[in-house]
Every structure is written in structure tokens, then in C-alpha cells.
Length: 219
Image (tube, rainbow, N blue to C red; front, top):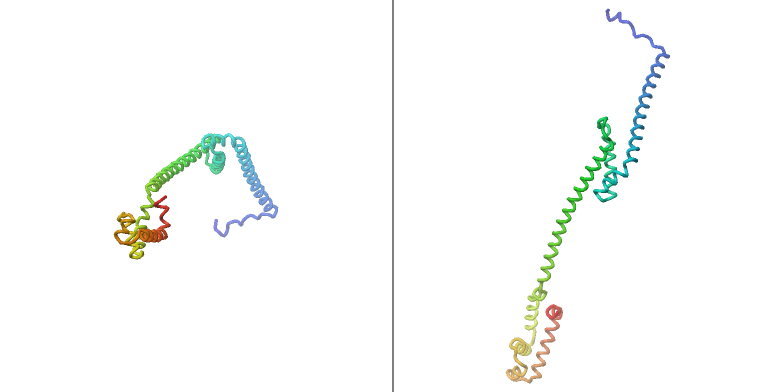
């Protein structure tokens, strides 16, 4: 048949168009109802699972993790994981057993995490204890007098140099040569009271310069 001789499209009445649209809407509505019915069925099943196994599965997790909050979190994670993967499961899958397996694995992961955390804390604690012992040993061996010995020597030298010549000589013979006051008086041809005066004068000056260190060496 020549192209020009092809029959025209059949005419469709308004009534027929309405009927076609009605059938399409009916089929679409029917499909939506099926989807909604399936969803409601799944939700009812999910709710039934949740209510029926919630407490027993939480107790199962708790018997191992020994933490109620952690056990509840594990249960929630497990039931959510099931819901997200439900369409990939085989038709004959034992759903409660599947969820319990998830609970078991998540409990194991929790315990492994706690174990690692505890081992790290133990290691840190051991290091802290070791460092504490070192600090105690170091402090026990510390002699404050030795820490300030150089400072005290410097102050003594400077103070000794500030003494008047006669006072310095008498103090030197008394404290560094261990001579008695009478011996110093005879050596310098002065009275014993003069010797005592100069020694007292020197001691007062040394005390004023060394008063902040006396508690270290006398404590």
C-alpha cells in the first residue's frame, strides 16, 4: 500500500477518552493501595517484632556488655539495620534470629572497643604511676640546701667584703680560724669586749642578708 493510501487514525469519542482515563486512574489507585497495604503490613510486622523482642534482646546484650544504655543502643541499631536491609533478605530468613545475630555482633564490637579502651587506659595509668614514682624519688633525693648553696656562698662573700676592716679581721679569726675571743684580743691588742662588739656587729649583718635562707639550712 502506498503511504498516501494509509488509513487515518480511528476517531475516538470523548466518552471513550474519559473511559480510558478512568481505567488508568483506577489502575494507578489500585497500585497505590497495594503499595500502601504492603507498607502497612510491613510496619505492623516491624511493630510486632519491636514489641515482642525488645526487652529480651536488650537483656541478652546487657548480659554481656553490662551497661543498660549501651544495650538499648545496640538493640535500636540492630532493629534499624534489619529494617534498612529487609528487602535484601531471602524469603525464608528467620527474622528474629537475624536480628539477634546483629545484636550479638554489635555487642562483640562494643566489648572489643571497651577492651581496647581499657588497655589504653591501663597503659596510660602505668605510665602515670611510673612517672609519679620518678617524681617522688627525685623529690626525696632533692636537698634544698644544695640548691641554694651557691647563692649562700655568694651572699657570704659579698657580705664579708662589706664589713669594716677591723670587724672583718676579727670575724675571720673567730669564725674561720676558730680562735677564742681572748686569743683574738691578745693577738690584736684589744679588749675582749671590743672583740665581742665586732663579732656581734658582723653576725647582725650576716643575719640580715641570709635570713631568707636560714630555714633551709636550719630546718
